[in-house]
Image (cartoon, rainbow, N blue to C red; front, side, top):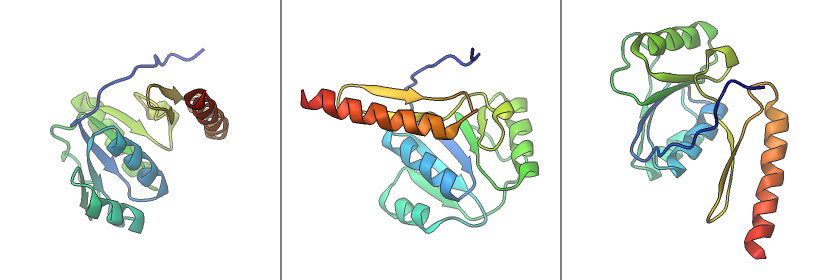
Length: 155
C-alpha cells in the first residue's frame, strides 16, 4: 500500500523549476504547460524539443546553465531530472531545507510527489502511478485508460 495520497491540484500560474533538459524533462514540461504552470527549465544543455516549445509558449523559460545551490526562492515545486545523481541530491536537500515540494526523477525515495501518467477527456482527468516501482506498467495502464475515455466520449 502506498503512503502517497492522490491529490488533484490547480497548477495554473504555479511556478515550477525543472532541472534537466533531456527527454524526461521535456515530457514533464509539456504536461505541466498543458495544465497552465509557469515553467523554468535550467540545464547546461537543453533539447531541441524544449527550445522549440519555449519559442511557442510564453509560460516556458530556459536558462542554459548548471544548478547553483541557493538559487531556489519562490518556486511552488521542483523537478530534478538531471543525469547527475549528486546534483539531483543537492537539489533535493535544498528543497527539503526550504520546504519546497520536490520530485527527483531518478530516485523514488527523494520524491514528495510522483509525476503521474495522465489520461484526459473533455470532462475527466485520470492520474496513474505505480508508486515509482514500474513506469512501464503505469504507462501501459494510462494508455488503456485513454482508450476507455475515447470510447466513453464517443458513446
